[in-house]
Length: 169
Image (cartoon, rainbow, N blue to C red; front, side):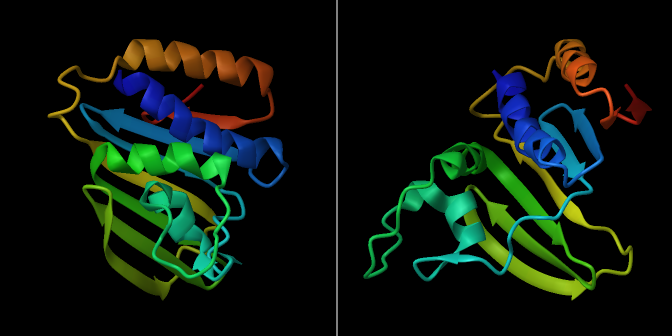
């Protein structure tokens, strides 16, 4: 059951590649922990929808209606990420802009800490890392199954630089 969760997260990064905004995706997984990053534009950190910060919408959409006085529209593409966040005991999202890195720490699906620092790495893109609640899923990640699926993704996205657990596929 854990592998489909990782596939869903990976597909958000793949969309950034397929839209021409990223060239590489890196995915590292072990036990219930994961880290997926791309070198694309990064989430739209400064965007708002009806006054709601976009990242709040993406990672906490299941909290709808958000306690706002406005009717914030449902965003289908954010429901999956919000669901994944709710399945994680820890989730850390870092959005890299040219000069700043914005990091949001979630615990059990709720924003716990929000910080901004200088982007000394001069890296752009988004990194999502976390740990899936082991109490929900006792099975470990099937690393071979995930690798085979990633190889299939790579076979139809030939220009994508795809690194899985330290190895380029």
